[in-house]
Amino acid sequence: MPEAAELDDARRASAKRDWRAAASGFERAREVGPLGPDDLALWSRSAWWLGLPAQSVALAEESFAGFRDAGRREDAAQTALRVSLLRLTGGDVTLGTAWMRRARALLHDRPDGVLQAYLIYLETSAGLLSDGGDAWSAESVARLRDLAQRLPDQAVAALSLVVAGMADLRAGETARGFAQLDEAMLGVLADEIEPEWGGDIFCTTIHACHELADYQRMADWTQATEEWCRQFGSDAIYAGVCRVHRLELRSAAGDWDSVEDALVSEGPLTAPELARYTSTAPRYAREWLEQQATFGVVEVVGAVDVPADARRYELPAGAAEVLADRSSLAYTAPLARMLAASGAQMPALIEAYRTGGGVSWDQLGVHARESQADMNRPWLDTAPSVFARHPHVHERLSRPGARVADIAMGEGWSSIALARAYPRLQVDGFDVDAPSVQAARSHAEAAGVADRVRFHVEDAANLAAHGRFDAAVGFEFLHDLPHPQAVLTAMNEATGDDGIVVIMDEAVGDEFTPNTEGLDRVMYGFSLFICLPDGLSHQPSAATGTVMRPSTLRRYAGEAGFARVDVLEDGFGFWRFYELVRS
Image 1: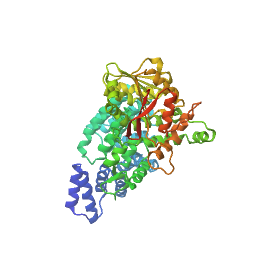
Image 2 (image 1 turned 60 degrees about the horizontal axis):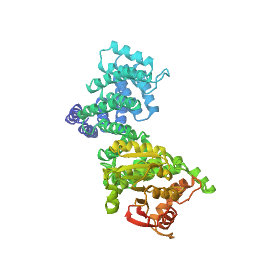
Image 3 (image 1 turned 60 degrees about the vertical axis):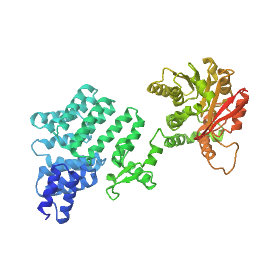
Image 4 (image 1 turned 90 degrees about the vertical axis):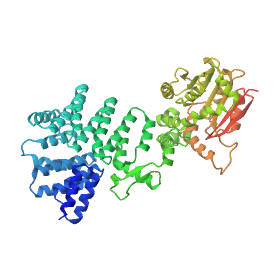
């Protein structure tokens, strides 16, 4: 038998919610001799709070066997309910249902009590009613309400409120439904219900807020529950759950930048935590994390030889800059979305390769649009610094009331950067892609420059209709156009005899070179999958492609009435700045 002092220390640690000390104590005690079911149950709870669900379930199942063999029927039923809860929340529906049936069998001829309330709650929340009824059914509401009225138990009252509240939400009674969930959450925070079940009520409430877009309530309960979690220590599993819900809240509000930052700063995360945040299956999340760890992209924090779902991962600083820091010039994570966007159009691309047709930007869809904007943004944010280094451009943009046309501005980051760098500048952005223009307008509002930045859903070939501009600029766009000469002509005419025209495009080599190294290799890839198919999707087309040589630009500029093309600045990341000059 284990030494009494060792067990007493472990039990005291459990009572104080010092989960790590309790788990270590029970483990040491078991090395001396077998543990009874009560101690196994305490150890199981400690393992759960430490984020070791597989170990917790195994210990709880062992504890169940001890209670059953000792004839302690209610204790066995309570443990079976807990195992069912742990199995179901871990996504193991088959075994979770089997354990629920065990609990039901043990309770079927027992007087009504708290355990029956837990059983009804578990059945209806999981949609596994014995009569085949729906989740959050009216019958479950009535049964739990009856138990709550007959049993003076706050846990039963809280469970009844959750089921009734969820049923009301499903019926469209939003105000009444949330009022009942709010009341149940007050019971959770007052420790009137077992913490594991309280955590499930919290998650149910937060998911309801998320589903119905009640983000203020979601934020309030997340903050309150974070404070509740502090009593269990930083190791507690629900502290991690709160972190994940906070990230969910940020993503739901569209604050993607802070989500990425929080994943870096608030990690490390386990596979189940990552799965919950990303709404993916835990098994796939684990596989991805392990794959990334084998390449050294993510790192394992702490012990490796722990259960797979308890292992924690984080992004090291170097990878975090490339994959999560949207302000960094090294940020290239959006490339994955661009690849996915083109891959989704592979049948259309293959057909275009055969027929000479194209695949439009609109066909490539939101992932292409947003990934392009996200990856270029850090560079576009700094693009005005190039103009500041060239006095004649800087002076023109600094004039009071100066107007600049930003051609094919996409989601508007270049226009916003210009407005921020030149407080007296008026910016008009032009793009034929309506969703991009809509996004640009939202970004300008958020940046506080909408009073000086306007966006138009319009072909830039019609630029002259919008009056005279002091300058016309375009960032990484010309090679995509089916009619580059027409747009350059419009830029020339709209800026008059002394206006400035600047084009930023890929800094590819001066001429085609076999077996070359560097940028040309990358840009030919973009050209085959994105830019050339987009250009050929509109006919007639110049069919330029991403690899627009300087000589090609000079030819287009000459046809548009310019006398020459000067390199304004080279070596700006993937790009080169050209100034188109009239004389």
